[in-house]
Image 1 (spheres, rainbow, N blue to C red):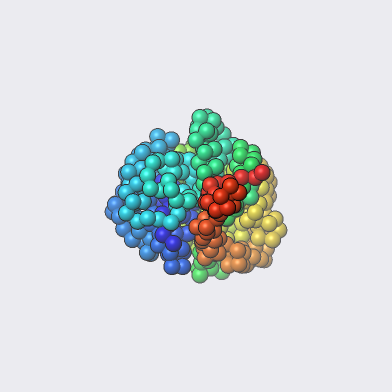
Image 2 (cartoon, one colour):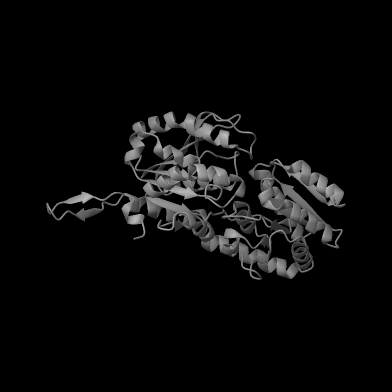
Length: 400
């Protein structure tokens, strides 16, 4: 198959969806498919290059930072990518298209051109679903007539967790939505601090935004009566300064290290030094950071929200606590910090789960199946003529 992936975020720009989209594209190439990728240009990158067989085409757009893209920045990608999308479609005759994010990326499915005659898949990631991020409620109200048409005309709509599908169905209850999670590559590196060292290191990896609950995590650290427990925060974002002030004000600044944005190699080294991974979000669809921690064999503490409860089973591969509850999170940190045997059991379970359920090969094969099914000839009998005609691509997907 000849496929075009489109995502307004691409490593190092963006979050989990950026890494998930290129990982899936790479895996499909390794399975024998041709995959092109249309995305945003980042500093120092060429306009066009091949990455592990994926042909990446970049266009300029406005961004505030590596982890920040305003509404204006997201829409600038759509405006500037439209011409490139039409050119690529005309030159390469793709069999199908894969848009990551219903908004803004899949707005490109409305642009006139050859691609309008081919099936497309929309991958919902979280912020593009009404109700996921209260700060975007105004935008979803404004854009809902267009969003509804994008979802309706897609051959497939895919959510990355059952929780996100349930949320999307509140807005479009008659729509059929598939679920395909994110994946991870199992790490061959076993965190070294489990074998040596006197410090216990807690790691979190996320954008520094309110939704990630980092204020709760820092507050929880202050409740743990263990001076040997240290917190590493990898990532950047608009609330970094306020989080640093919080750490100072509650007396844990000497045990919290803000690493800022880190590339994949630096993150791997940080995971190799960690003993516990924490995700304190107040909303999540399917966290790539969590899956990568699982692949690295880290025990988990996470909040009982969204798709996280589909990845973490309390007492089996991690501990679950309520969001916004610093006391409960502190107690969970105390529990795991004081029980190395439980940490090891959780670590082994997580590596096993990634191997058996969340490998990128498994994820790519699920997408491959949807693309193949979108290309199957589908006919309906026309009583008046006795001949067959092609059914509208979206009719099969609407619940009657």
